[in-house]
Length: 202
Ligand SMILES: CCCCCCCCCCCCCCCC(=O)SCCNC(=O)CCNC(=O)[C@H](O)C(C)(C)COP(=O)(O)OP(=O)(O)OC[C@H]1O[C@@H](n2cnc3c(N)ncnc32)[C@H](O)[C@@H]1OP(=O)(O)O
Image (tube, rainbow, N blue to C red; front, top):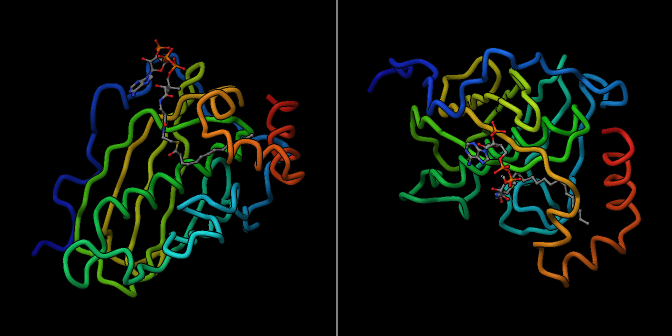
């Protein structure tokens, strides 16, 4: 088995390549300081929420610029093949980490496209260390990239991803989400405070 992906980071679908007039991402002045834990954006989120028994419980930390580091430990509930993480779970960890980047921009955005390279298998009990950064912004489109390593920041690469997030209004969630959860989220002062922070700092 090779030790690194011989292709390196995949260039991916053309939609993942920023246009020539794309801008460098700008960290919002109120973004959490480098090293600060971001905390969960929603308690029932599969990626970061504490109320999901089989969720990833991924913990993301602000990095420099518009970058994030994150960690999660692969649990037995995350298996695909015996003793190995399911690829979709690994993609979920990348999606959650990449999605967390938008908090540093103070932009509400959803994943439009996400491409994953699976470089090596990830056993249960592995701590996956993820690093992600926004590479460019063009209008509502946010281009980002991530890598996941086994055991720590210097560990072998297990997964890589490139993504395109699309900025949306909060109505995206209110109009499309199931009403029981939307009503509960709207009644949660923390959730609303956070959404308002997004809305008044576009
Ligand atoms: C009260 C409660 C509050 C809760 C507050 C929570 C806040 C924090 C939540 C965070 C959650 C984190 C979790 C992790 C992140 C997810 O996993 S998000 C969940 C997965 N993603 C989704 O469900 C998105 C589903 N898709 C959609 O809703 C719509 O397709 C989209 C993405 C909003 C785009 O629709 P649209 O707004 O109509 O945009 P549209 O005009 O078609 O396209 C805009 C541009 O984007 C491009 N584009 C759009 N889609 C794509 C695509 N798939 N591929 C390539 N290009 C695309 C278009 O080509 C266009 O480009 P330009 O022509 O401008 O150059």
